[in-house]
Image (cartoon, rainbow, N blue to C red; front, top):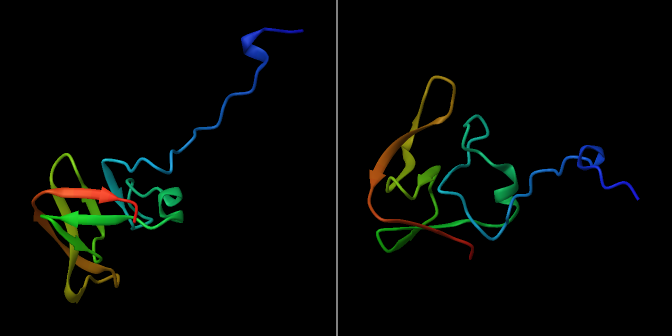
Length: 92
């Protein structure tokens, strides 16, 4: 039996589906986008009210980004505004 640690394959990073990250974006171009998190629904409660239009959130800094109406940038992506307040992420 070989107990040499160097011969064991490296473990793949495991993403806990029950714990939500501090910062998450639904835009695949963002460095904060984690596709595995969207296999199940993610709910956002902002200032005690559930929101369904959140593009990105950060719990520790206390903000969310939501689309600014129907406005689009020159590449066709929605313009977003940052709202500050109490942010809670949960699995419905």
